[in-house]
Amino acid sequence: MLRCSKRDVSAAARVIREERLDAATVEALSDAEAERLINPPKEPKPKDDSYLQPDYDALVERKAKNRKLPVKLMWIEYCEQAAGLEKRAYVYQTFCEYFAEAEEKAAQLTRQELERAGADCEVLKQNARGRLERAAQLIVGRVVER
Image 1 (cartoon, rainbow, N blue to C red):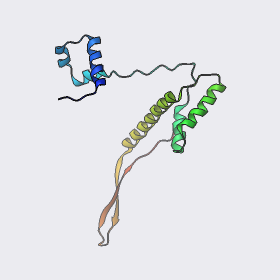
Image 2: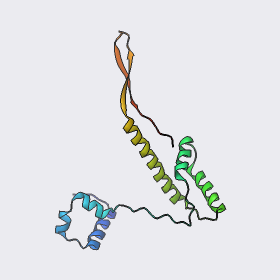
Image 3: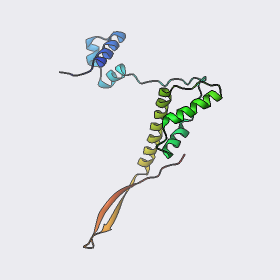
Image 4: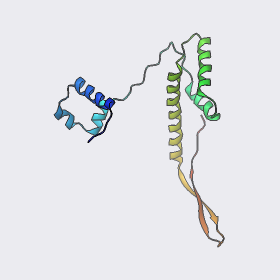
Protein backbone atom coordinates (compact mmCIF):
# COMPACT_ATOMS: atom_id res chain seq x y z
CA MET A 1 0.00 0.00 0.00
CA LEU A 2 1.24 3.43 -0.93
CA ARG A 3 0.79 6.16 1.67
CA CYS A 4 0.48 9.76 0.56
CA SER A 5 -1.50 12.82 1.51
CA LYS A 6 -4.77 13.98 -0.03
CA ARG A 7 -2.93 17.08 -1.19
CA ASP A 8 -0.44 14.98 -3.18
CA VAL A 9 -3.24 12.89 -4.71
CA SER A 10 -5.12 16.07 -5.65
CA ALA A 11 -1.99 17.59 -7.21
CA ALA A 12 -1.36 14.44 -9.26
CA ALA A 13 -5.00 14.27 -10.39
CA ARG A 14 -4.89 17.95 -11.42
CA VAL A 15 -1.73 17.39 -13.50
CA ILE A 16 -3.23 14.29 -15.15
CA ARG A 17 -6.37 16.27 -16.07
CA GLU A 18 -4.53 19.38 -17.29
CA GLU A 19 -1.94 17.46 -19.31
CA ARG A 20 -4.55 14.95 -20.57
CA LEU A 21 -2.35 12.00 -19.59
CA ASP A 22 -3.49 8.41 -19.92
CA ALA A 23 -2.39 5.43 -17.80
CA ALA A 24 0.24 4.25 -20.31
CA THR A 25 1.84 7.70 -20.47
CA VAL A 26 1.90 8.02 -16.66
CA GLU A 27 3.53 4.58 -16.29
CA ALA A 28 6.17 5.51 -18.89
CA LEU A 29 7.22 8.66 -16.98
CA SER A 30 10.52 8.55 -15.12
CA ASP A 31 10.55 9.65 -11.48
CA ALA A 32 12.26 12.92 -12.45
CA GLU A 33 9.68 13.68 -15.15
CA ALA A 34 6.79 12.94 -12.79
CA GLU A 35 8.36 15.14 -10.12
CA ARG A 36 8.72 18.03 -12.61
CA LEU A 37 5.07 17.68 -13.65
CA ILE A 38 3.73 17.62 -10.09
CA ASN A 39 6.20 20.10 -8.59
CA PRO A 40 7.38 22.35 -11.43
CA PRO A 41 10.42 24.49 -10.64
CA LYS A 42 9.41 27.86 -9.29
CA GLU A 43 10.22 30.80 -11.48
CA PRO A 44 11.47 33.83 -9.58
CA LYS A 45 8.89 36.56 -9.25
CA PRO A 46 9.82 39.76 -11.07
CA LYS A 47 10.67 42.56 -8.66
CA ASP A 48 8.08 45.33 -8.63
CA ASP A 49 9.64 48.79 -8.93
CA SER A 50 6.97 50.29 -6.69
CA TYR A 51 8.52 48.40 -3.76
CA LEU A 52 11.74 49.46 -2.07
CA GLN A 53 14.25 46.68 -2.69
CA PRO A 54 16.26 46.11 0.49
CA ASP A 55 19.94 45.24 0.36
CA TYR A 56 19.54 41.69 1.62
CA ASP A 57 23.28 40.97 1.42
CA ALA A 58 23.97 43.81 3.85
CA LEU A 59 21.12 42.64 6.11
CA VAL A 60 22.44 39.06 6.14
CA GLU A 61 25.91 40.33 7.01
CA ARG A 62 24.44 42.51 9.79
CA LYS A 63 22.50 39.53 11.16
CA ALA A 64 25.65 37.35 11.04
CA LYS A 65 27.53 39.90 13.16
CA ASN A 66 24.74 40.07 15.74
CA ARG A 67 22.90 36.73 15.93
CA LYS A 68 20.40 38.10 18.47
CA LEU A 69 19.22 40.83 16.11
CA PRO A 70 15.57 40.09 15.30
CA VAL A 71 14.57 40.05 11.64
CA LYS A 72 11.43 41.91 12.65
CA LEU A 73 13.55 44.89 13.76
CA MET A 74 15.28 44.97 10.37
CA TRP A 75 11.86 44.80 8.70
CA ILE A 76 10.58 47.74 10.79
CA GLU A 77 13.63 49.79 9.81
CA TYR A 78 13.04 48.81 6.17
CA CYS A 79 9.38 49.92 6.40
CA GLU A 80 10.42 53.29 7.85
CA GLN A 81 12.99 53.73 5.09
CA ALA A 82 10.39 52.84 2.43
CA ALA A 83 7.90 55.33 3.88
CA GLY A 84 10.58 58.04 3.84
CA LEU A 85 11.25 57.37 0.15
CA GLU A 86 7.52 57.13 -0.61
CA LYS A 87 7.90 53.53 -1.80
CA ARG A 88 5.88 50.47 -0.87
CA ALA A 89 7.33 48.00 1.62
CA TYR A 90 7.04 44.23 1.52
CA VAL A 91 4.81 42.67 4.15
CA TYR A 92 6.72 40.92 6.93
CA GLN A 93 6.20 37.41 5.54
CA THR A 94 7.52 38.32 2.08
CA PHE A 95 10.45 40.20 3.60
CA CYS A 96 11.30 37.09 5.66
CA GLU A 97 11.08 34.80 2.62
CA TYR A 98 13.48 36.98 0.63
CA PHE A 99 15.76 37.34 3.66
CA ALA A 100 15.84 33.53 4.13
CA GLU A 101 16.73 33.07 0.44
CA ALA A 102 19.58 35.57 0.80
CA GLU A 103 20.80 33.84 3.98
CA GLU A 104 20.77 30.45 2.25
CA LYS A 105 22.61 31.85 -0.75
CA ALA A 106 25.28 33.34 1.53
CA ALA A 107 25.60 30.06 3.43
CA GLN A 108 26.01 28.12 0.18
CA LEU A 109 28.75 30.48 -0.95
CA THR A 110 30.56 30.05 2.37
CA ARG A 111 30.20 26.25 2.24
CA GLN A 112 31.50 26.18 -1.35
CA GLU A 113 34.50 28.29 -0.38
CA LEU A 114 35.27 25.99 2.54
CA GLU A 115 34.89 22.88 0.39
CA ARG A 116 37.31 24.23 -2.18
CA ALA A 117 39.87 25.17 0.42
CA GLY A 118 39.17 21.97 2.40
CA ALA A 119 42.57 20.39 2.97
CA ASP A 120 42.63 18.02 5.94
CA CYS A 121 45.11 18.65 8.72
CA GLU A 122 45.74 16.42 11.71
CA VAL A 123 46.63 17.76 15.13
CA LEU A 124 48.96 15.39 16.93
CA LYS A 125 49.93 15.27 20.59
CA GLN A 126 52.45 13.22 22.46
CA ASN A 127 51.00 10.73 24.94
CA ALA A 128 52.53 9.62 28.25
CA ARG A 129 54.58 6.90 26.50
CA GLY A 130 56.10 9.40 24.08
CA ARG A 131 54.06 8.26 21.08
CA LEU A 132 52.28 10.68 18.82
CA GLU A 133 48.54 10.22 18.63
CA ARG A 134 45.84 12.04 16.76
CA ALA A 135 44.21 14.67 18.95
CA ALA A 136 41.95 16.23 16.34
CA GLN A 137 41.37 16.63 12.65
CA LEU A 138 40.81 20.05 11.17
CA ILE A 139 39.51 21.09 7.81
CA VAL A 140 41.52 24.07 6.70
CA GLY A 141 39.39 26.66 4.98
CA ARG A 142 39.14 30.31 4.36
CA VAL A 143 36.05 32.44 4.55
CA VAL A 144 35.97 35.34 2.16
CA GLU A 145 34.72 38.60 3.62
CA ARG A 146 32.39 40.52 1.37
